[in-house]
Image 1 (cartoon, rainbow, N blue to C red):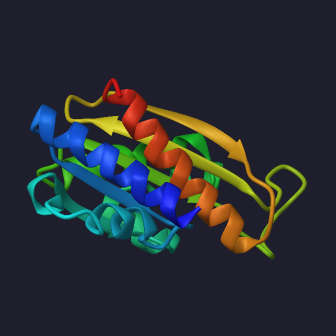
Image 2 (image 1 turned 45 degrees about the vertical axis):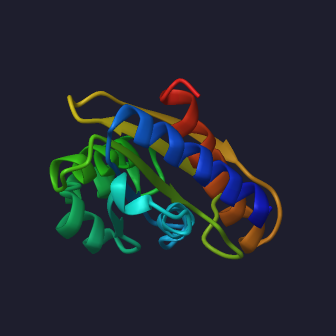
Length: 162
């Protein structure tokens, strides 16, 4: 899967460079892995603006402007919060497009409504448009995190027409 992640990051980089747009990431459960994958590609300084690792709820509030009310009402792993993360990353950077992730990688933390493997991924754009998808990944903590990075990059590529 590591090679697949690098191939996807390379492809995303080519599209970002072609469109002359900057990417910003807002990551929770992946802990910066998307940004790491992107910056493993030579030349990424031309199209990667910055990454936010907002693992705690407080970090989501401080770094990305996610409201405490939203976090309390919906939970960190929710469509509403991941959309705010994607929008906040754009607003607090020079990025043109964002990807944000929040999920329950395990082995603990799951509930009946949000079992381990539940992940929300959002993609945002400079003009405020953002969309999110939910996933239920299987496997251990590492597998859930890897699948999250893969799907985040695949979604980014798809949204850039690749």
